Image (cartoon, rainbow, N blue to C red; front, side):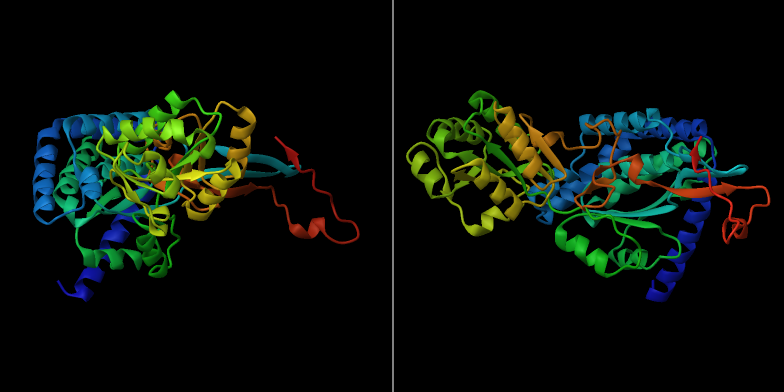
Amino acid sequence: MTAQTLSLSLTTLGQQTREAARKLAILPALQRNQAIESIAQALEAATPEILSANQVDCETALQEGLSRSLYGRLKLDENKLKGAIAGVRDVGRLPDPIGAIQIHRELDQGLVLQRIACSLGVLGVIFEARPDAVMQIATLAIKSGNGVILKGGKEAVRSCEALVQAIHQGLEQVGIDPAVVRLLTTREETLELLRLDQYVDLIIPRGSNSFVRFVQENTRIPVLGHADGICHLYVDEAADLQKAVAIAVDSKTQYPSACNTIETLLVHQSIAAEFLPQVAAALQAKQVELRGDRTTCEILEGIAALTAATEVDWETEYSDLILSIQVVDSIAGAIDHINTYGSRHTEAIVTENSQTAAAFMAQVDAVGVFHNCSTRFADGFRYGFGAEVGISTQKLPPRGPVGLEGLVTYKYQLAGDGHVVAAYTGAEAKSFTHRDL
C-alpha cells in the first residue's frame, strides 16, 4: 500500500469513526451500559480464541528477544483476562459522565447559562505490548460516548485483533456501529494517525518518555502524556520495619514491569544497619537483583549479593526485578533525591510519625504520594475508576490515572428570550443577577 493510499484509507476510517462516535454520544446511558455488558459477554465467549492468539504473540516475542518487562505486559492468562473483563463491567456500573450539569446560573431574568459535560469525540491511543489496554480503553470510550482508534505494538497484534473482534461482536449485538472502536496494526499507520487532526480530538501515548516526546513533536492533536515511572519508597527512621519489608517487596515484585513499581529504595541511615539485611533477604528470595550506594554495600557486605550503583541507576526505570538502594541522612535527603530523579509518578513513605508523613506528602512532587502502603495501588481500577486509559504525570488535569473524568469535556449552553448585550452597556445598563440555580 502506498503512502497516499494509506493516508486516504485512514482519512476514511477517521471520518467513519467520528460519525459513529457522534451517534454513540447521544445514546442514553442505559444503551451505552448495555453495550458494555454485551462486550463483556463477547469477551468471555471468545476467551479461548483470545488466549490462543496471545500465546502465538508470546511465542513470537520470545523468539524475537522481547525484553522481560515487555513480555510481562504482553502475556495474558485466564486470570488476567477474567480480571480485565471484571474491569469492563465495573466501568458499566460507574455514573454516566455525559450530560452532568456543572454550572446552572441565571445571568438575568430569563437568561440562563448551563455548563454541560459532553464527549470529547475521537481518541487516538498508541500503546506497546499491553493487549489488556484494548479492553480498558474501548470500554471507557464507550461509556464516555467517544470513538477510539487504537494502535498497539506489533508484538501484540494477534491478541489485539482477537480482542477487537470480540468487542465488535458485542457492539453489533446491541445495534451500535462497531466503527466506534478501530484497530491499526502497522508502524506506518502511527504517523498517519498523528496527522488526523480533523477527526481525532486527543492522542494518548502509553510508553517511554522518548516515545511520548516523539508523539508530541509529530502531531497537532492535543496529547495526554504518560511518562516513565521512576518510583521510590522511603523507609523513615520511625518506620515499622516489618511493614516496610512487606511494602518494599510488594512495590517491587508484585508486577515488576508496571509503571508504578519502585525502582529505588531510600533508607534512613539510623535504621539502615537493622533494616537492610531484612529487606535484602526478602527481595532476593523473590529473585531481585540489588544495586547499592557505598553505605548500602558496606552494610550488606558478606550478607547479600549486590553490585555498586552508579548515577545512571538513580535515573533508570528498570521495569524488571532490579532495585537500586540508597541510604539517606534525613527526610530532606530523601525528598531531594525523589524530586531530582523521580518522574512525578508515585512515591511512598513508611513511617509511624504522622508529622514526618505529612511533610513528605506535602513536599514530594508527584501525582501520587502514599503513606504506609505499596506504590502498586496507583491504578485506575484500584482507585475505583473502573479502568484507566493511562496515567498522566502532567501538572494540568487530567492528572494521575485517567478514567472517565479525563475523557469528557464540556460546553456552555445559554438560553434567553431575545436578550441582547447592548442592554447591559451604556449609561442605563441593566445589571446581571448572576444567581446560581
